[in-house]
Length: 90
Figure 1 (cartoon, rainbow, N blue to C red):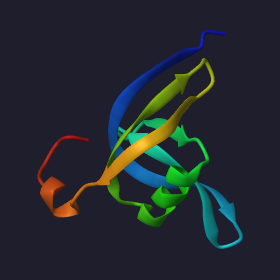
Figure 2: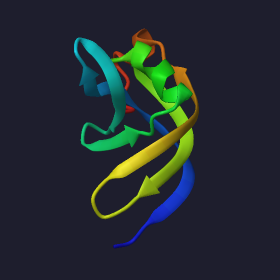
Figure 3: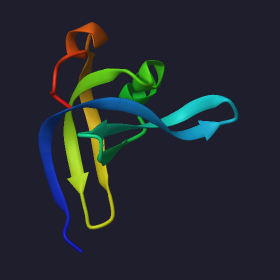
């Protein structure tokens, strides 16, 4: 089982991955409509839960193994949805 750890930036959509009752308790970043990066739970991850379904640029440490992709978020920027209506960044 290979393990890669590196820093990178991702552009994608914030989606819920875990729920606690009716409250989102975990998120992931969906990139290119197919790759899911599970967000490591910490203060930055909790901040992202307020931006579910929004597009973000996230910088962080990526941990990649044979089974999953994870990211420990260092910082993020919520992108303006209107800027991407006709954009094919995704």
